[in-house]
Length: 281
Image (cartoon, rainbow, N blue to C red; front, side, top):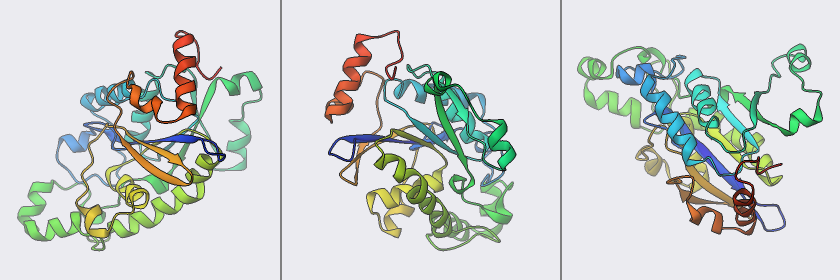
């Protein structure tokens, strides 16, 4: 999972949270553990749900970010990412209802539209994007990783998994995954941050690795060595069009996050003043 907070363009800052689907728990927020993670299978873009451990990881990740401001959520089109996002939000103190935005067709947009302004204020828009999907592992998908290494050799499998521009059979390289994920981030997520909105991104190891490469200005060699933990949120501050990594919130009471900018400090004051109310109200 990835969460970023950004202040206004006049000098304030916003938050960006990244999270991986819960394998352990969200990488920026990466999703939690999936059923194929548990079986040590190449998953890629196969749409596999979380395990019970992944569900627990997603809920725990939600506790870590429960007091941080959230305005919009982006997640991949895969169910393990979506489960992580929704389960994490059950722990958030704003108590707003996540509403998935449907724009697949004009009819889908119209039929899912909310017409009550009051209800809109009590909702958090959630955007699904296939561009945030995990790297597509091609003909490796569904095979056991250990058995694949025995069949093709550990060195060859390591190249498929860890090289920057080497593709597995009929699959994507990390470079190809980066192309779609970072393009989507620049075109859709960065404009939200520039508007002063607090964003959470829940995706997967390689799509998040790609985004972090862009945010941290990593080299191809640095990014292939980057390890992410499932279900562990990563917080960035977006200020003056720069991304500043703040690490993973250790818990909902982490004071250092709120002290970083004036807008977050004010948010915390309001939160403490109204402990049982929506801090965005």
